Length: 410
Image (cartoon, rainbow, N blue to C red; front, side):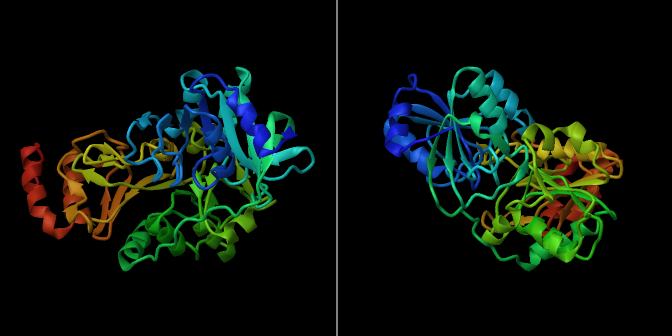
């Protein structure tokens, strides 16, 4: 690894082939300083980032690519969205979207290794794909990046060039949990068996679920990502000390980042492991809790598109729904409010008009109640979704539409 000045890095990047493909860390570990050097040095390039945050280059000559759209990519002209389950993105990078350059943000080296810290995700696969074809690996070394273990650890020899940048990591905007999220969280928590292994995302409902589980004991974490809610469980003594907290990326408060630093309790693994449905299925009583934008009477969930336009993507939802359904004693739960306040529409609709993100869940939960899906016939599923998940103002219309779809709903 050669630590260089930004001007020297710019000279190296300026020598890249025409329109190189650059894979960069996403979520809240984006290497902003190194990206700025790239953007100033290279006139045209393709930028592949998962869940890109606000501030990504937005100019002629830059093409954004992603299988999971973030706020910094959403609605951008020319965005190339690649439908892909997160567990398969490493194959995508190795076989189709091969990177010429990978830019990551890391901790400083310790005993000959750097750490990818809070963002492991698909980056190890991207680094391997680039190095196998003579590409470059660039690190933005940040003393404020936590040193985490597992697949996060990289030998310094894997890095070609590095720049130093001491800057605070981004934290998500804190949103207060309202009474609706708390009710949904309590309903979901009631479905979690003793000594379950949990997978949850980030947001008001997942945080409310985790808060409702703080009095439990012996819980485990095997998740695509986690945030401060898991730290809350650890503080409350709800997590089993016999099992490491396992995930692929994390983001949250500065307190979370401080706790992660050199914490042997936490194991950060590459996506091919955390999101492999077969490995998920091996976790005891794996309970997967995911959200959706809409569900329909066929118990299908849309978590990716709004009015037919891509909003996010599959992410890991499909991976974890499949894995949880195969886990002994596991459940796949979709949790959502029954009504969308901004659009002023029901989130339960007769039939999805666009692509389905996931299906065949154990339960669908809203603040109205819980519909048991797994093991019920199609009519019973639809009836429960109308009676227990849908908002009362939408139920009669849903019953009529359901009858037109062949469900003899009462």
